Image (cartoon, rainbow, N blue to C red; front, side):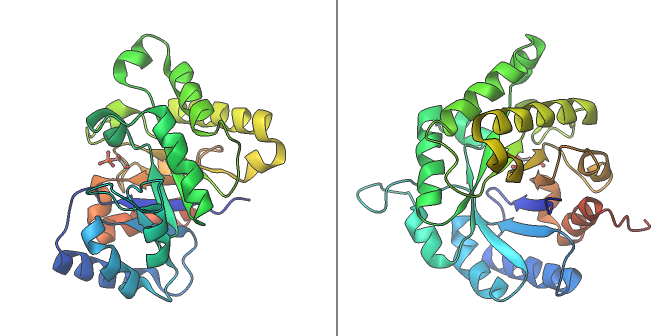
Length: 253
Ligand code: 13P
């Protein structure tokens, strides 16, 4: 059984004070041995603070992005090497906001995934189709292209894949659980076809308008082992309720 991994993508939110208050509250809720793996991906400004507050805790630190080059003249960028130096363990690669707002190509996402492994980080590789692509019946074709490109050089380390249909992100309209399950099953089959047994160790998350109220519908699906949460992850109590839904321990609200 793969241990579910529930990750918070704070995107461009939270001051240092807000980040610190959040992390202390979450640590209080989580206790010593949470039933699922938790990852917090703050903004770069809060990473060092989060590394300090979370040190020795069961909550892992993630970054929202990373540059594949070790160092150099890349104004405004932060490298995977620098992230690893800070104690970061996970890095989101190829989020749809990076792909669509910042023009990241499949090839660049592949460089990031490989660099993450090179520096000992676990990439959270985001894949997902737009609404037009889904309506045109191309959802799998798009996701398969993103997988093929990002993993063209093989599977050289631990990997998490986040299936995030673009139209479900930040809209309040999640995918139908059955559609998420169908996609996750195809992703799993593709991984096993290309990488054999190693493909079975990859955890597949669903992302896109996950909330405490709907989390269970996704996290009980046979081919989903976690969630990548944006808006609802900004509140520690809501994020913890989502994590509990992944553990199978349904709290009684
Ligand atoms: P929302 O949960 O706000 O829809 O965002 C999902 C997401 O993009 C997580 O990476």
